[in-house]
Length: 386
Image (cartoon, rainbow, N blue to C red; front, side, top):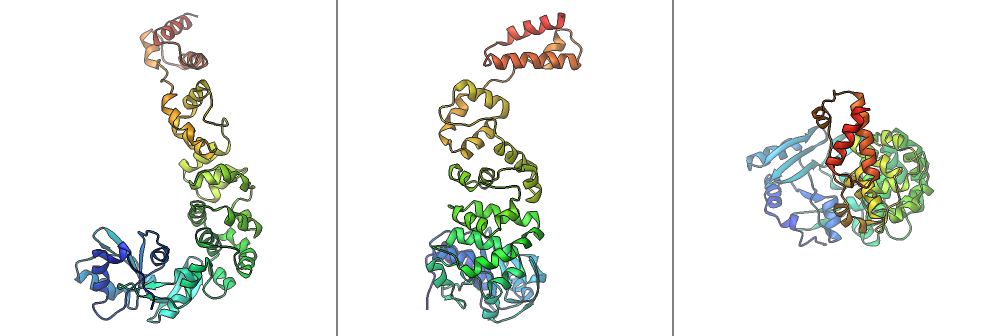
């Protein structure tokens, strides 16, 4: 029997206390999903999911009896969260889908591990590990993981019909774990169901797309998505995957590099925050092409107009990280005059004062910020007399 060994989270005292409490009345708790999958690949994991063959109410009672904090995060769907030594454990009773409708499903609890595995999306996410590391693999996930196969549990078209977001999840997992060519039947099922993506919420698309864009090399998956007509459902205003080559691995910068038009519509479609929307619009319509050799004067002007955060963001998106050390060096000064300086000269606040200060600031910028405060005050005095 295969075993998962040497995982810090498996050996941790917090894990042993939680699993010990859950098993105290004869149940069999097992880790499942990402932590087991990543552990088999030698990758670190902090998201710890546990499946168990007992009702959530019974699990909660046993945990509380062991003085372990319990949060009823999803009792209706069989899920509670235990917190031990700062670590969160999401604990879900074995279940079967009675009725599926997108993200949520009507479920029934079971004690059959094979039925629980059958409702999971991919075989590589349906590998279970007990506290001793012994693996339970009812759908062949280990073999698929070793071979780089991303395979649905059961019929791909049926699983996608249950939740269209699984289309994006397939391409994300292929970016992370896939090798060689994906299964043709699965690609065909994703392509056929692609129009159904339109019915997904922007929040769900946002989360899944950004996870895909954070993969070390999402390009092959994005190309497959375009061939299958999937990417067109997310970026209907157009995209150019050639732009990804110069972008770093930050999701929004990668999005801005491949999207060709329509920042407002993208922001609305993906329910971006105001901060994300501002970044996306700036990166998609940049004020300049950056390089490590940009003249100091030009860099100072860009920094004054847009700030170091935006310019640093743009440098990374445009493949010019060597420019970053120069941002502090080239930082321009603040405009030395304020409205109170005009008042000190006897001017009354109003639009005319604002126009004078603006004109002086523009001239100061054009002089590469060289004009001193005293000279600017003298010019302001002259302007006030005209």
